[in-house]
Length: 153
Image 1 (cartoon, rainbow, N blue to C red):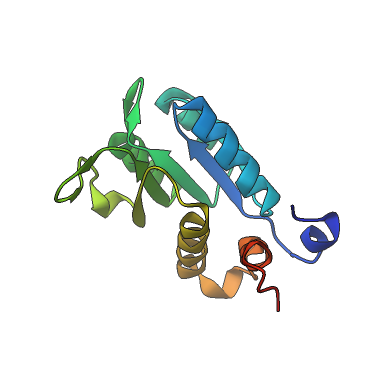
Image 2 (cartoon, rainbow, N blue to C red):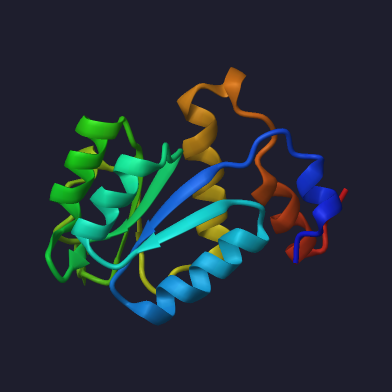
């Protein structure tokens, strides 16, 4: 778990909108990202996600593709157009030829479920730092990932 001391050494907390209708996935990933130093808000539907984006300036969306009231592709298009939000798709819809049903031009990255926490942290860092590297300080998940792997140097 990230201590308060580590959090205070980070000059900026990145804000993540986590969208998934599978409550267990949402709960676990939210806690893991929170312990890695991110500010996380969750949504279980397109409607909830759009409402959240109207009220908070998120740095990143992590979005499931299959949602109860719509499609993650359409949601990401709206989040990008209306709020300038960048996203990572997560999906259990995988075909033999790769990840199906994801319009990859809408997302910075696409990850299959089940979610590999180390892989998603690496992907988040890449996406956040590719936005505008000069405005993004050291990502808090880098410290947490090194601690998890026992390479905290």
